[in-house]
Amino acid sequence: RKEVEQDPGPFNVPEGATVAFNCTYSNSASQSFFWYRQDCRKEPKLLMSVYSSGNEDGRFTAQLNRASQYISLLIRDSKLSDSATYLCVVNGGGGSYIPTFGRGTSLIVHP
Amino acid sequence: EAQVTQNPRYLITVTGKKLTVTCSQNMNHEYMSWYRQDPGLGLRQIYYSMNVEVTDKGDVPEGYKVSRKEKRNFPLILESPSPNQTSLYFCASSPWLAGDQETQYFGPGTRLLVL
Image 1 (cartoon, rainbow over the protein chains, first blue to last red):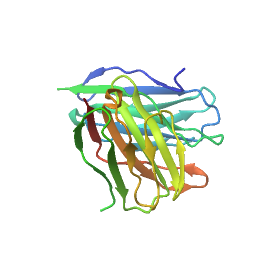
Image 2 (image 1 turned 180 degrees about the vertical axis):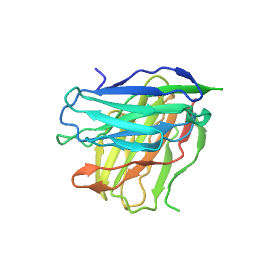
Image 3 (image 1 turned 30 degrees about the horizontal axis):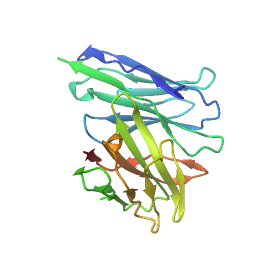
Image 4 (image 1 turned 90 degrees about the vertical axis):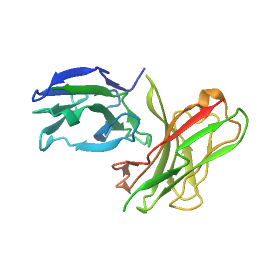
């Protein structure tokens, strides 16, 4: 059973659209959460950390729902350059030092 | 410039020929790790290290070895590569704060093809 689940997509949206991704995790002891962005054949890069109170960085908003064990990423006013795969990462917690990556959600923003 | 470097970036080899992929970081991070990424399977951790001389298995350690003799370097060793180890490999490092791992910084990746 995969511990971190993401809808693989692709999400195909026009420029300017708002799009949201969810990621569910199974380990209730998990302590830290991140969204990474990965462009084709490149290394993942941190997009945002996800805090309990939620956080916003420009057009991007990340939220954590511990009760339902999911995190979300909202992208407003999508740009062509937002096209990428978005990876959800959950750090184990409870003594586990192995971060778990979701398989990623593919976003395609078209003109 | 703060970075994680990997070498080689591309490698074609044959079954059974030992190889080493190097990884180096200049950020003085305690935590380093190796991942492989395969289509449909996402990133899976091979080994990690929480500090010098401290290494442990990740999710898919079979067929791999690592060492951490210096803080900055964390080489990945394939003693006898097999075709199922054909993959895209990433090295990553991160600070280790308050008992938890922080943001990971990834190297540019190594594409390995084992014939």
